[in-house]
Image (cartoon, rainbow, N blue to C red; front, side, top):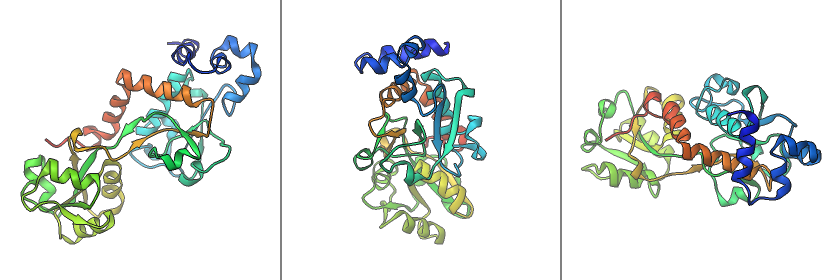
Length: 282
């Protein structure tokens, strides 16, 4: 689909929004209302997307979001395409995690750094509809008897722990149901320490945390896999925009279209699924 056609499709999807906003989404209307066009994006004719510095695997590969490689880099370019922007019209900027969710003007059109959608943050910024819901995952270390586990049954006779009061803890009880019961810890840090010293054989955390712990924190960390979808959802991630941004409904419509088409699932499977070392444990 051409750039102009995509912009027209986005405008139709948002017929309930203000007429001036809709006009700004089509080239013909841009000529009729140049001021609206200039105010819609940070830079006219470009889509400015922000991420962290550095941006980490598996969300951005080799800290190069412009490559489109990595889960969030791929999401960003998919949204850009839905909005009618060619890859060469995407401009990347960097922000800290905290700075992006503070109130005030932004130097980006939207930002993605695994931002969980919360009511508190939504007082300062806008969120798109969710582009990802984090599953639970099981991790261990190479020296653990859990290192060879490939199924939930393989874990049932082992000591599996998580921070108490979390979705991860509930997932152990309901999905793994180990004979010794779920091992409770006050925090994820306590659970990681117990895994490192052999007090437990494996721990459950959300998948993004699992990637970080096994890739950065743990010596010999092993990501065994994801728990089935009915193990619950920890967080939903949204794209961050300036508060009351006129782009919010357009970006949300783009994310919704990608979800409905199955493209979000395809990107998640490519970068966070079995190909990324996180198969679903059955």
